[in-house]
Image (cartoon, rainbow, N blue to C red; front, side, top):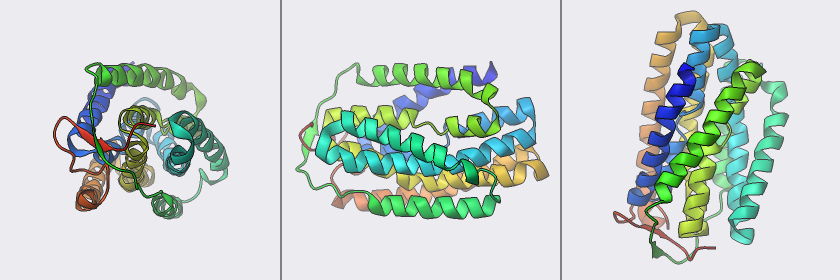
Length: 275
């Protein structure tokens, strides 16, 4: 119940903040926000409080492996979007996530450091595989119902996922925590409003910020049974703040050279003709 209430409060706040941030600073910034451990972090915390540190460590390790599925989702979506539009890109991306989520089952019990090294390598390769945006820019107008609709859809989906996850075991719960719910909503709305370049920029921001989430989960998985819940999550939080701050500086440094970057004017976004 406590996790459900947390989702009811935090999900609309975060999806609304990411949406407004994407309008103000560009879709890459919105993707960076979504890449934070907004779902996996609370899931691991409440599992630790409800079922103990060992269960939470196993779930966090599964979520860490799930970062590979998120990376696959982003690359498949982005590379499909330019040719086939967002509906096909969404279907392909979700299929990619599911296939990789199933494929990572054998590595869920790897040593945490080895798993983190593999995940970091996969994220790096995924960023390198992202297509470049080469479309002409235009100012995008937004509906007044755009952000509220995103918030409502995201909250509804997350409630369903949260209700199902705890009864499926630590591994499945951890993987479900990495479902690309909010990233899908943000990417599809940005893609429809600003075109292919916006959808791709969202995915690029998510992948760039995924390093911090992976580090957060690795810290929790590797330390919670040894130093306790409070200390483990405290160190993990500091870790993700430091890494995400560095990533944000990199994203802002690239914004002037990339369409759909972080330098869009207030109240508008820059992107190509909607596809």
